[in-house]
Each structure stands twice: as structure tokens, then as C-alpha cells.
Image (cartoon, rainbow, N blue to C red; front, top):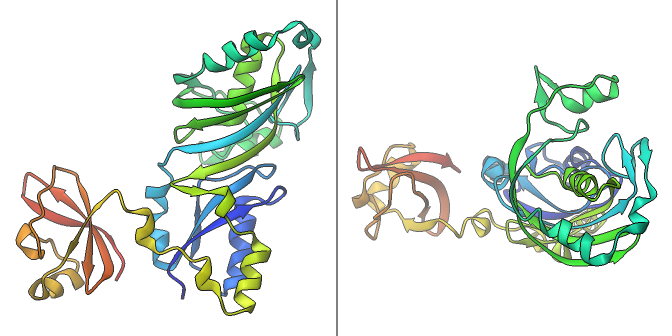
Length: 299
């Protein structure tokens, strides 16, 4: 079984689940998961975790994301992207100037309450919103606070507007385009989307499914496998003392004397724990008990 991470370039037309399903066939292993779902029309970085690395999925999903987006002004759709059914058209975008469009887009930088789209995987009473939407049922949704960290590289070629956006977890770029369109008074829908960066991995370095298959055939999969700890550099690392190795293997709590160097942490801090150069676990510090408790075990 392969343990590690692949920076997959998800191509348009595939769902994120499609990518995982195809990789299970290519790699001949079942334990595979992805972080950060991409819509079928979207492209770009999809972090796929293999084997023991699947335990990191929930940690990697929390990352900020960077997208390259294009929206079309003067049109609204039920899915909030160009693949949906057209709900309305408005030619008032012809009266807008570039400066006004840019000012409107930039006004969304910061935190704001965003209404998620009906066509999304958010669950309501055990069902995903898109299941209700496909059945023609409109469900009342609650707005969620998201954060637009930056918007750059705005290029206007009316009725199309291109821009790059860095945002928090939970932000829907489709809904951001919808909100920009509403503020401009002409409506807008997402026409193209590429996730350019996620957790320090970039689209330019991502590998497509066909490339992964070719590497497998050449017995060169190691060229695209990223070690688990490569995405955990934000957490301090500590080597276990030989006499504490058994405690670690049994998943026991550890004190600061269990490591080759003093581990001084704030309450809730997560550390990487190694044994003979191999990542064995993530531990979390409990200041109240002055002890490190198991958080993620990779034994």
C-alpha cells in the first residue's frame, strides 16, 4: 500500500469522486481520499491522500485556497455557473465602466456573509442540497461567514471578467460571482474556474490521471508521491527517545522527557513525532495535564 500524497490536476468534466475512483483502479488500492471538493466544471489542484495519509484529510481541508476565475456578466443560472439553466439576462453591464467593476469586485475583500448555492454538497436533514435542487425543491439556507483574503489580476473583457482570488475554507467562488453580479445590478455567473493553489501545492506542479497511469507503467510512481510530512511543516518536529519508543508504539501519552530535546508548547499545539527518522504520529499538548496526547497515529 502506498502512503503519501499526490497533487492531482483535476480536469474539467470529472467530479472529485471520479478522480478518487479512477486512482483506486490505477494504484490498485482502496484507501484513498481527497481534500477540498471541486465542481465538475472546475480544474486544478486536488490533493489526494493515500493509505495512512488519509488521516490528514480533515487537517488539509482547513487550508486557504487560491483560484483563477472568470465570470460572465449579464446572466444568472440556477447552479450559479455557466453549466446551469439560465434564469435571467440583463444587458445593463454595457453601461458599466472598468473602474466601477474593479471597485465593486475589490469591495468584497475581507469577511462577509455568503449564502451557499443550492447546487452544493452541504447537508440539510441528512441530504445534500444538490439532491433537493435536482428534485426542484428550494431549501432555506443560512449564510456563512467567509473571508476573501485578496483579489488580484483583474482583467476585463466584457461581458467577461477574469480575476485571481485567495479565500478561506468554505468560500464558494460561484456565489462570490453571483454576489458581485447582484451588486453591479446586472447579475453574473461563473464561466471558468481553476484552483491554482491549496496548502502550498500549485496547479503548475500537479499531475493528471493519464500521467499517473504512465508513471505506474514505468514503475516510477515515486516521482509523484509527496511524503505525508511535507504538508506538515507548520508543526514542530521531535524525535522520540529510544526508551520511550514502546510508549509511542502503544499510543500512550508522552511527557516532555520522552523526546531527545525539550518540547515546550502552548496548550493545543500539535507536534510531529518521529522514531528513527520515520513520522510515527501527531501529538497534541494538554497544558492542564502537562502531557502530550495522541492526535493522529500512523503506525
